[in-house]
Amino acid sequence: MGRKTENIAEVIAAERAGFEKQLKKLRDKLAAKEDELKKLRKENMELKEQLAEYKELVDGADPGSEAMEAPDSYFVEQLRLLSQTQRIVIAGGSADWQAKMLQEFPGLGAVNSKNFDPAAVKAADIVIINTNNVSHALTRKAQNEAGPETHVVLTSKYNIDRLARDIVMQVSKKNRYP
Image (tube, rainbow, N blue to C red; front, side):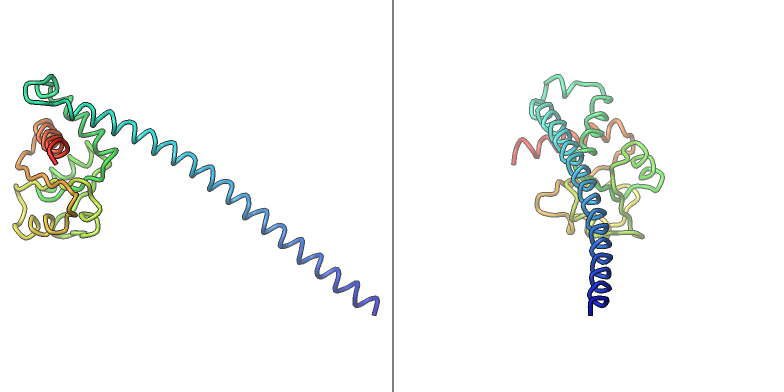
């Protein structure tokens, strides 16, 4: 009986060593995920600070203010910042226009009649619908899928500078006058 007990003890010790290795791997993975979470929280705080700066700039943009008379590049930069802090989806317009917008503002999402994703529109903070080269059905779908807090911007502008001015001003009006 002594030999069986030794064998069982060896098996248990081997299994325990295996479990301890697995536990160490899991703890290492957990530590890595916790580090990643800390980085994401820091990035989130930085983005919230950028958003606060943006809101501060836009809230002060009354007609006749400096922001209203700012060069178009100001609004392009504001839209770029907005696209980093808000979920923005574009719909409609030509394929070239959508490609140009996605290149200029990589954080944007895009939907069209062929790849309409209701979830993308529902999750958006801002939906920009370019009424040029778009079906009425897509326009209605995008408007209907947008959530109650989603700001829907209808535009027919292709020029990015003018479009950025239009979007930033419309969003600032909504935020100022709920």
